[in-house]
Amino acid sequence: MNQSTTHLELALQAAMQRCMDDVVRAANADAALLEGSGMEKNQIRNVLNVAEESHSLAVVANFIRYQLGRSQTGPAWRHNGFGLRVIKRIESPDGVITRQAEAVQERVGEIPSEKTDDVRYDLMRHYLGYLNRAFYYGRETKKWDDLRQAGKEA
Image 1 (cartoon, rainbow, N blue to C red):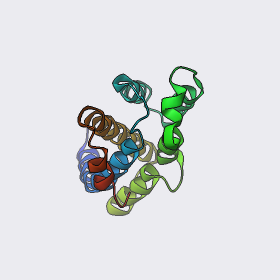
Image 2: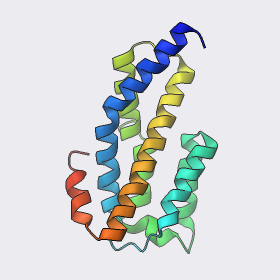
Image 3: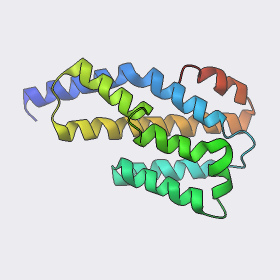
Image 4: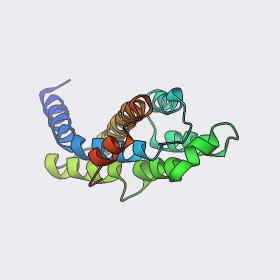
């Protein structure tokens, strides 16, 4: 790794860290949708596992669509539009992942296209991790209003 690559990596990491508040707020707001859904703890973790294995936003969105369509898991994923909301956060041009990737681009400047994809992937992975944690909190404590409050402005 040369010095300019190291500098770019550090700049990208710093810029992404500045985006985390919005990513966490979105995850909290989305997890709050699951109140009363019957979602199992491992279901969101499974999506996070797919994200970590695939390194692809499209693969993750496809997996969520699969979950939406399954008879056993579908009702929880469809509850309050949760699954479609998560897909929108990941894929949509106005979703939190795209918006924050653009914010990283603005902070860092010129980024090679492969690094732009890496930024989007890393932001998605963070979002899904925070979503998993928030859901676990809501499910175990039943303090869904805490999540709604923490998700304001998302």
